[in-house]
Image 1 (cartoon, one colour):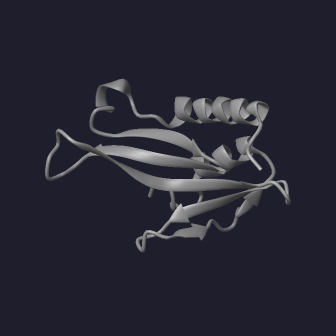
Image 2 (cartoon, one colour):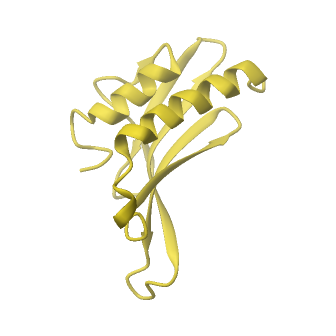
Image 3 (tube, one colour):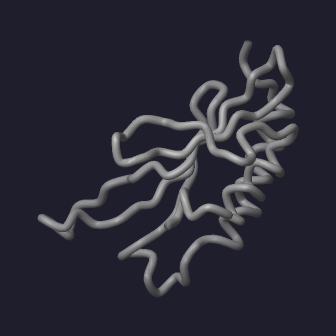
Length: 115
């Protein structure tokens, strides 16, 4: 089931609040930045950096994913390990609200998202 317009607006608001806190200073955003995107039921947080081989090109590196499970009414939080697979984030693998998702990612208690 697709997210409703209300839910999408709520996600956008929470994401913008997260970025207001986490984004680097404007003077270095051409070297490193943080963004987000919504794909179906999942929110992805990513870093944008220039390619080391060609600094005129940029790449997005996904650091966090949260997927809404409608039947359980929870957001499941994942982080990407070196194997490039998504792994459940412990100790907070599930939360009730999108705001809690961004709080967990922002706190990054175990250094899984931003090192």
